[in-house]
Length: 119
Image 1 (cartoon, rainbow, N blue to C red):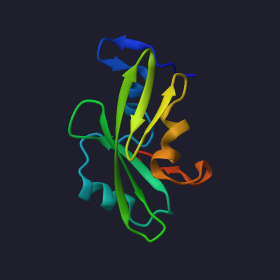
Image 2: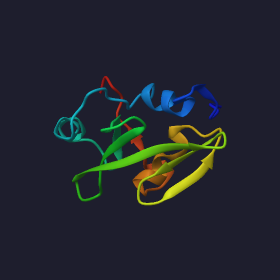
Image 3: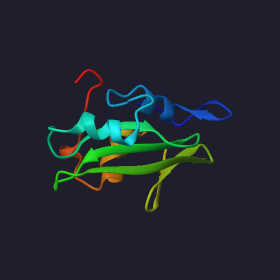
């Protein structure tokens, strides 16, 4: 399990798990992510960088066929991490992005389908 221990003063292991995830797409725009996701099943997703440090997006196909770009922010407090989108959830210590991405996407965990970088 990945822990929420600090690697440096500003970087935690959870962010490393996001950036090393099979669905991580470096420097992909919203429009580019829509092109990548076209033709895939509902709740197929990619992870991508946001506008500021510790800000991310999960871009995914909704049941209506449209792509949603759900922003989320990772925050830290007292040795644990939290994510925030519509609400703040946590504290998490040993969870990875795979453990929480369904909560960010507001779907069942079994429905999440990461789009592999080479797909």
